[in-house]
View 1 (cartoon, each protein chain N blue to C red):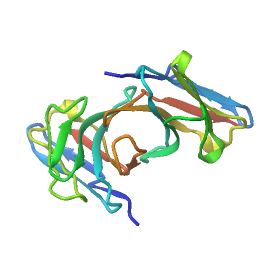
View 2: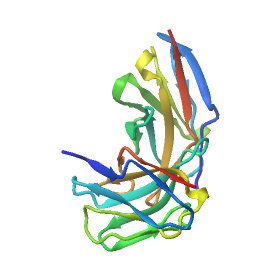
View 3: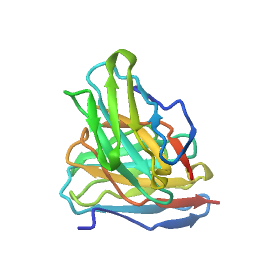
View 4: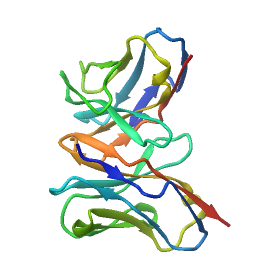
Length: 111
Length: 112
């Protein structure tokens, strides 16, 4: 079965600084990849998705992600973090109706 | 438009009790799924359904049953609750399994 790895459990950045959250997927064929964000006590909200085509995908709230097949990576980026971005972020991959999530990265934003 | 609605939001059970977590969606989505979320483990798929009358197992199906008699509803049943099933449960839906999913707000379940 495929697996998704998010190497960073917790990241702290200063407000206004850039952000990169790492994600590695395992499914070798054309993957369907997602990033979701979860605020405390809430469900998950889709930030962006990658199915095929342009390897740089734009999402909501100023986020983008780049698909790199050679590195099996789908890292999430934001050029300037806002305090409201503090949340938990999940990378996910779908294979034949089975969606697998990474363990998540908790983002803390310092004033 | 309510999206995905889960009830109850909180529940405490005793070991051995049974209960049903309810999930309903009003978006006419064919695909519905249940996940459990545990600290440090992300979300793990319990069961999913690709349409009314069709269900299948996910990564962690043991101890849970599902059925899908209508497009809108996808209840999750715990037959005999165990402390290991203490978790936050999320229901989600989408047009198809590979499409982005819409999540409910979760049910926080504690089993004593």
